[in-house]
Length: 583
Image (cartoon, rainbow, N blue to C red; front, side):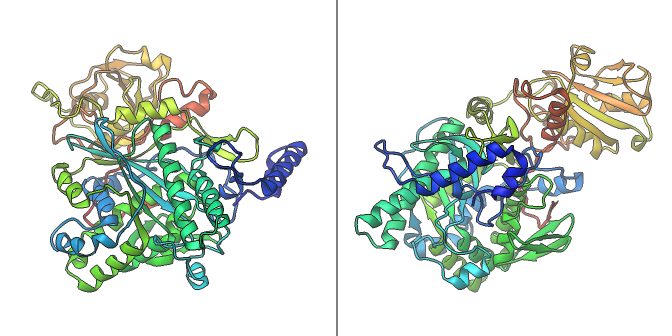
């Protein structure tokens, strides 16, 4: 639903408020148009989430959040979980599940037909909608809507969870890329808008046309949803530069039923929350959520430090926990839970026509543990405005997004990386590591290294300082990766240098005593880098960093702030029961 006029008026001048009112009046009067060129009706009023409140104005950045070392270690212990969830949302892939799946696969609702195109990877679009119907087009009852804290059916059909899962053809790794729902993008036949409106814009127009042509409501909704899926798939493909090969969708009621079927999902909050918009009212700490409670947990954005982008983090960690629960022995060996899962999946999940789930599960067998990573597309600004000045949006640059997504393939699929030359490790001086604060700056072109190296050193007992991109002065301190210290003989700096593979120690007048600064240049292959294969590394998954040139529109202090936050390492999926605490 749209921002309230009072909130928007506080942000803009009275004249801008009047223009927004005029635009809203125009939206209310506009009519549907077809794909042949007639004007589509505006879906501006549908761009906000169903909780009925305006998007909060936050200074946020994408990423996995500021997870502590203990959390990262738990999340790094297994890597198959996210992809298992995609198959498990569709269904469980081991043991009794093989037989179980064959019994009801024909009952799963099938959506769009997708012709996969070879581009070096399998790309799966995982979507969560706020649909007021189940997957078969049956409207939810008033009682169900009340339990879900969803409100009445007012025509919204937002896709507030959009995740692209990219798996290189050689199966060596996978990355789940979250796309913020407020990302401002070009939508085919609709102009520019928030990406979560692409589905609704096409679906509602087609539904209304079908009903005008005499179709019953259920049939009209199904036709509308088909067009909505096609529009969203095309929009995501245009933004990311990849062809979507597989599609999975789950709605409000499906999400609720799925969590009930497994007996609830464990989550952990850093502090208590009480959000009347989403219905999220939870204590701090670890707890088990079912049904509507679980839905509120992943839908809340108001009252969170980073708004919608903290919601992205919640969705990511929740999926990892849910997948672990689905794949647990307690679920796979319980006829009652399997029956509930079957009901939840057949009434709530939609897959594309060509998806061979069992074949896909077999392909995942070669995916090495720990190689599934969560990330978020890079953003230019998190506080932008739509072209007409009526909506707060997340500004993204398609070229930067496409470069980031393409970079996830790294070297050519199937091409083996050369093994680094083995060399003896330098002796590490004995020092009180906790008394040294280590800052890490990245002067190279590889995203995420500063955060990864910082995490590694934190695991070795050093106090973690700031991370971010190097300034021009820092970059010129050394042509190669180095450790900067107040003195070249600083023993703490020498210990850090030794742990990072024998980097040189360089005296710098900008580094205070008790502090050490690690300068990362291109070619760094020590702990925390993708080239490092030693067991001594505690490196975490790489998250989004500001691509080259994206800080040009920001003032230096803002660029430094965002760079520091975006360089924090992300996390991998987990299946050991560990629950990361989030905002």
